[in-house]
Amino acid sequence: MSEHKINPPARLERVMNQTIDVDVDSRILKRALFVTRSIASDGGIVVPEGINVKFFEQNPVVLLRHGRDGGFPVVGRSLNLKPTAEGMESETQFADTELGREIAYLYGVNQEKEVYARGWSFGWDTLEMETWTLEHAKAWLGSYYDEDVVPPAVKRWDEVWVALKSVMNEYSAVPLGADKKALSRAHSEHGIRIAGEMLTTMDLEDATTRLLELEKKEAISRERFEKIERDIQALRRDGASAAARGDSEALVRELTDLTEMARTRQKS
Image (cartoon, rainbow, N blue to C red; front, side, top):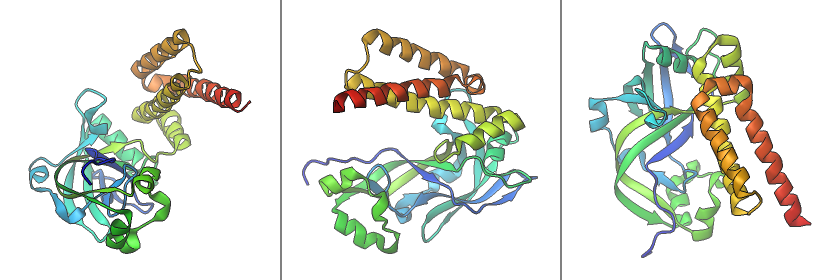
């Protein structure tokens, strides 16, 4: 194909396995799978055998949300990378800092092994890429092919990007796959501040998506759009406090109602 419809991103998100193994005293989470041999939601495959980890191993940092939240983003380090049949997993030791201990707690490094968050995001640079048909990708994946997770765009364009060779940069803890009720419990009952911030982040990302959908459908006035946009920015600054007050959740509910009203008007 001369022009690609789907291009590889710089990061892919994965949800950690249900079963965990931890060393609470040393703040270690063992065998966290962060790269899988499957078609990603972004429409492609990162070939695990083609990942160069040499440079990462010189500075094996684990970040929070790729450093997007400002401040010093390192929350741990990788003690060991291990290729598996399914992809690549790592043994993670969380930092002995307030943030590191809080993230560790959320990922199940606590006495009860209760898991509040499971999301990991892998960041890399692509060195060699090919574009495959879906049939080619299906044949290569074999038993790891899952029809249910193939993105609609892949089926529409019959195009799968494949990062044959890549350089690993880092992997990050992200809110993907987190149980919002569990995060709320961690924040309110156990005082885990970052749980509240993750809740706010999830709510406001949802709110932003819904707001843009309303703007695209011209279902909201410019004045109201700008007010809600300002509210989102203010709540981002409030972080965990916004989650504790329920402000970010209330904003999502408001936008959900507006979106539903817009859909109802379109049908009538």
